[in-house]
Length: 313
View 1 (tube, one colour):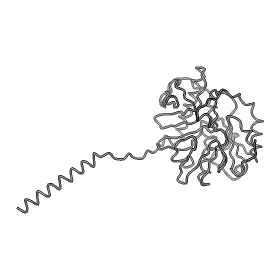
View 2 (tube, rainbow, N blue to C red):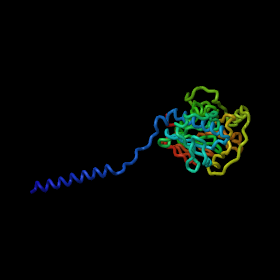
View 3 (cartoon, rainbow, N blue to C red):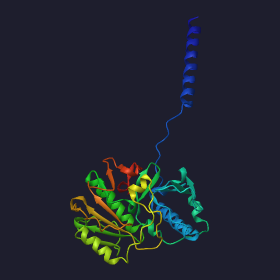
């Protein structure tokens, strides 16, 4: 009798254990953290972005429409997305308008199909990688900022991010026509330290005033601005609804916050289409903050960056 009772108890215990195992297996498991693939982190991602922007300029030239005012690009290997400052619900083929026209997307496969390639993406030449958002690569057009882009945070994080941005602008396919000037102490302290090959597009200047003057003397003249829009992002970036496809090469100036002139009118020499990257805390159109964990707070842009560009190498 005792053995019979014991067998029943053990049987019930076994049934309970099996049932618990089944319930555990059926219970939804938390998703694995999304990580970017090698194709998203590597150079080939920039080739896709460049192909997309060139195709975009070609389609707009062919159809006679204005280029969209994009301020960011997101690439996830399966899709290439453009984030627009103002909604445009009609996108040229092969792009598809989403999110009420504030985002245009395309499959990279569609970029290989026949179509007008267009000019090098000159209006977007200062579109550079700022980091990753999970599995997505995030790029920002620095020229769309209404004033300096200031990056504060731990010195090591700020410097590595700035070095990555400058290196990509000089050596990446998107910024193939961009000019860069290192100002003040950054011009002589080994800022890039061989991160990019020697190029005639990299300059140095003792002061920001000198840098602006040199850039102005080398340029044929700035294009006239077009009609402005009034969306929130547009006010932040002072965008124009009409961007010239052809024009002077955009210029990126890089300076330490301690050497940024604070007097009134000191930044008047910064032309529309150019960008000023400041290392350290300073008054800015786009104030960003790099975290000690490698994250990047993009401030008014609201773009999530879980690992900034300085940590991608």
